[in-house]
Length: 565
Image (cartoon, rainbow, N blue to C red; front, top):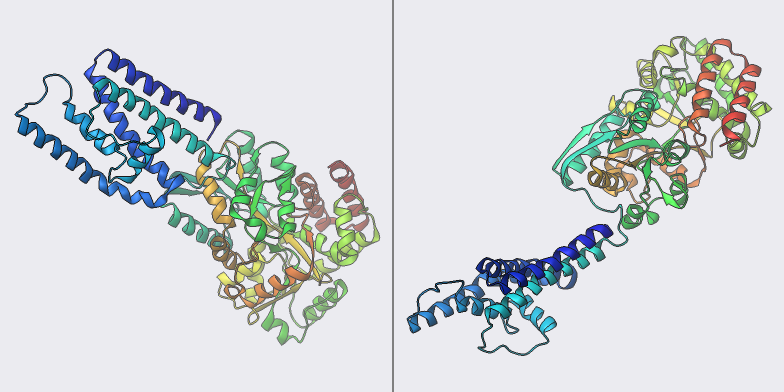
């Protein structure tokens, strides 16, 4: 509720009372009747205030209203019949005032109104006295105005400190924007839609998902809409710099701090995750999951049949690929680069983490270490050594199509985030039977975070419904339904591990103990301009395989985008 809203309601209350008194002073029957109606409506509204603010148990008292009025009407009719009086020739009968007086009497069996009279009239039984019409309407007009004033104040108190914390309105529309169109991810999104629709069945959901892994296409579409003043009601965005640099610094988002606090998420979502969706003292989006970016997926049956073990280092990976090729697997490494080479950038960041460790990785992604360092050139060298064992049509396939190479048995390994697990299971592959997973070579003990979140853009057409959506995203129910389908683990720590398969349980345990590092390829560690530049550079690297030149060009990108961030 805004201050303007409060002022308007206060004025309406005052004017209502004044108009009632003015009309009565002129002897207008319509004003008298209007004041009576206003008093009755005000009394009904008062019960709602009492129900919400003072005594919820009084809500049942509304059942006494018809009997009380009936008794008053019956008593008045009986007395008039005994006196032989007919209906009044002008205005309401004096018995009409008796009816209302009895309802407002402190001993009335309608407790809210008896209580009200004691509170505002100071007590004292009214006995059989009759109010004059002028006295009654004066009191009724003031009562009606007072009720409006009271409601205004109650509304104001209820709204204080709860900005941005309203629930969904329950009607209208809700547009959700994401890039979840692949197997597993679209299924997880559908589960959250089901939960939202159960809570708000009259809201029509529009799924504005745009195809393209890692949002390679969706982000461009979103940027056009945001800059054109046509935001979706809520949109998927990676935690960290993708959120903060792109939208918060551009003043395109509303803070959701009050929602976060009202939902009690501090006790459910790790502080490390809260920190990467926070800036300037506020929280800006809700983490719905945690993906692992440094995972090596393998066809378990095929790998076992070739008597090769999952590699534990970059050099082990080179050796395993060589062995598998010698044993008849022509392209043991599945590689995809369609849609911007972000998959190849994942190879790079995982290998930097393997070669340099967590501290070096964080420093180089913050512009505090050089991309020409030997640790980065080692990371690039590993990729160069692996490329001869990968499919040559990588530019024509996306990540889920690379998964299909493992399922078909034409490839054995795929380095990809754990959304690959959601894809595998959606295609009826069984974890630890048909496929397995280990940390990407050399990164054991480290967890590359890729965190999907939803925020609240300024100017959302269906803002209240979007707030309801954010609450579903951050809820235990929502995350328990979404993450098993998506292949990720929950951002919340209170979701039962029993809902997840063996690999997810393994990752949930490692998430609690491993060193956490943010992904650059997915916008958490570095600004989008840097990540986009790296994508382009890695596309060139697939062609020229020039380690020195690529390292030098990566450092130029660092100088331009990281040291000035």
